[in-house]
Image (cartoon, rainbow, N blue to C red; front, side, top):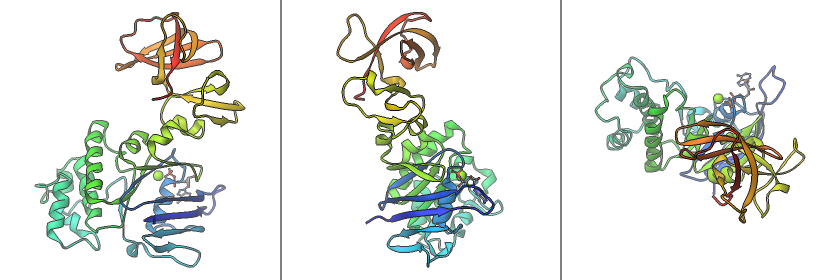
Length: 332
Ligand code: ADP
Ligand code: MG
């Protein structure tokens, strides 16, 4: 049975023309990390606030661990929901020490062994007596997390907690986050607009758009099999090749704009083909532009039907105007 079940949740704020959420449904098993992904305004924060009990849905059902939190006749108050919350700004008390911040949470465990464990797992041991302004942004983040985990929440709700960190710091915090969730076996609903964060952390991904779920699944599945061009683009540049130009059976989706079936091909899935054509799907073209991205060359190849974006080995010796034959390997 799912730990968290969200069924047909809708919400429209007063004095707005469109619903913030329009019939959202998905669920999560115990111990899993679910990433909510979508552009700004797609309804991620609204959904998180509804699950936390900070916002009331117009319709729909929320069930946590067998207990109904929201329905047409039920509303459980935020304090009774057993959800831990971490928002973007961490909301630490500036005049309390790290330790005081951690134990301040309502219902924080008085089990000092567990607290010590959490503090050590989060890598903030030794900082207990400092004030928030005396530790780094990444450490503040982990204090906020430990504070949320100290209440032993059934569900941890995180709203873009990594968005204020610079990318260097983000990498290490991301890894530590992941380890912390895994070690504490905490079920987590994680809001992010950063697809890389979601790919790195999530067991399951919910792609939202205009208040609706567009695609739900394992991150690698969504990456390999996006259901439309919008989802495909979330993962970066993608070539949308008409299925009529690609042989074999590959993942396709219907594209309204191009009125036909489309095969999404990632830039790194192209290979230069030497000599005679081989079995793979080949396209001939002329290099229109190229930029060195360090790890790879990004090349725009002008072919008969369309321009292709390719990521080729940085050592490839080509120039603007070079004629190339490329094939795509869709097995990876
Ligand atoms: P996200 O977190 O994905 O950026 P939000 O849930 O914050 O999206 O917003 C979804 C939609 O609801 C947006 O159109 C936003 O402008 C609107 N919205 C959010 N909060 C409020 C509010 N308090 N009052 C009116 N409209 C709101
Ligand atoms: Mg938001």
